[in-house]
Length: 166
Image (cartoon, rainbow, N blue to C red; front, side, top):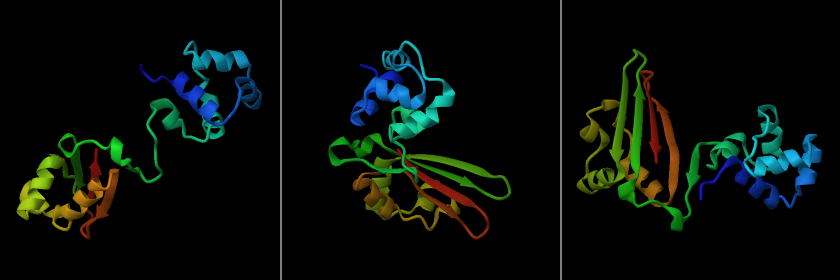
């Protein structure tokens, strides 16, 4: 069954031990409007989303997408919910001050193999800006369930390197 905005609103409201009437009163709308949201007949007015998210102790992004968001863009996935490493990707983005852009996607299984072989990122990607990135540490973080934006590094020459695991 697909999770919808209405189902997320209802679930968050119940977690807050709040009735539709209480929610409606706090938002200055009718209980019927809340009921229609939760039954996916209508959606909340966009201007209500920030107040609704705050009331439900969540973010607008999480309400709309259903995906928890952390301030840092990093999440720790509980052990039983983690993907197998063969289903994960290491994504790197390198932006240089002269306008060069490099985008790299490497399967985490390949990263694991590279670590076992003693290889470093420049050997894998051919990009010198990645020479100080420790694959072992990235792999250790992923092994502990860390996902998302792992780091953003600015090199002395102004090159910025972003590392993301999904």
